[in-house]
Length: 536
Ligand code: TNX
Image (cartoon, rainbow, N blue to C red; front, side, top):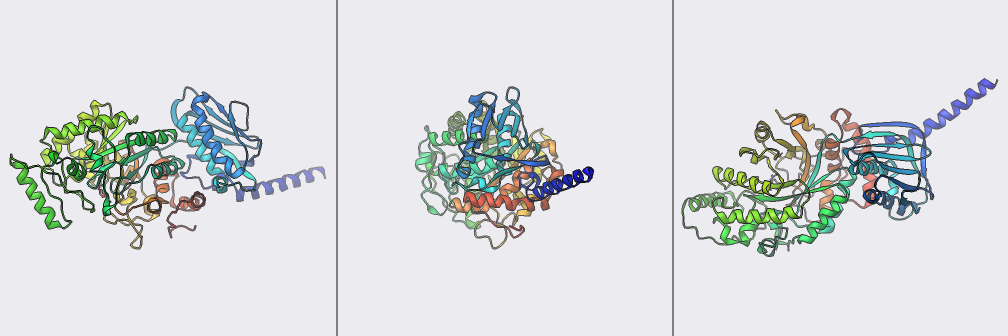
């Protein structure tokens, strides 16, 4: 008799437990990117008005992470959530001297939550996972009356690739500091760790350079479509760098050269080899290329400032690689910008230099790599730079030509994967997309998701790859709403491609989790694209 009661009791509690588990377990919390290992256990943790965050490790280093978490939890719960070193139910623990990997472990039980990692970045990623393990309403900015429950279980996690990035083109259209910070906030939630800022292009120069003030005075004064453009002062740029660093995101500044330089040539006529601005039609471009060749082969070049350009053609401008003043400009720009950039990389562009003679291109890119090295930075360039001799450690960013990626590999250099057909977020989703281009492909959400960096390009395998980056070119992107429409949800797909090992990834799993992320975006006011491939 006693025995059968005991069995019944076990049966009831098991079925209660499984109900609980069906409706809310860590495995269906909509974690993106999917962690390496997630295991559910029975019960849950409940956040209460007594909950607090305990920092274990150097408090001065961890306080930002603790406060970051508390600030996410306070508005919706209305709980005070203190942060300090006192014993508490949420523990953030830095193990060792903090110089370890980006891995973290998150364990959730009835009695408490423990996140431990060997680096601050790892702890920060654990915090991001924890926030996702709460109901999406945890992100509400006003207090909501509900129970704040996190399903119990254990997560161990670490990124597949070291470089998980996105690029924002602030040159074609300029975006104010607040928009960039908002973008950084979103990247942080997806555990991305590099923001590449495309700071210069034909249509605009967006970073103050004190030794060449006309770059911004003139070169920053317009944008695609003829709007007023803009630029970041050095203080503003430093502010972006610091804001990103607090979120474990490193800024990679790009100065695109020797092509994509019309804004320079419009600002300093003495640097202009004399190629005229195209009206946009091919015939005009061909004529200006011919003229450029004439001018470059002759000795008396009458240098005049180019006109500012507000169209969206590419490949018509070039710096003069035989002119010493060109390198004075490059050196001054690299000096001023690297002084403001703590990260290891400086992006030198190098793409689509269609009017630079091949020899000139090689000479230029090789010399610029030396300049960048002289300021202690590693160069990244678009894949065309692999046609030159790369310095050891420099990186080729594959966007178009597999052959170029192969040449980088053959030189012993790494490749950053941004295949335009998969990773370009300026591509339209389909022919009805309200903005975007489609020269590379239409890219639906499943196209952004269903590829493997390690097998995408023939001859390039995992060990050749530094990481993955999703660029947003902004010819058709004018404001934050446009950014959000093209970037979300595709950035979440790319984040998972970069973070989660391929054998853990599947479109079906992603498609089942992304609607939860959609709820989070809705609460955060992000206007994402509701892909018809997903049952939102
Ligand atoms: C090609 S990708 C470019 C950019 C354009 C983009 C538009 C690359 C290295 N160059 O200049 O903005 O296509 O999709």
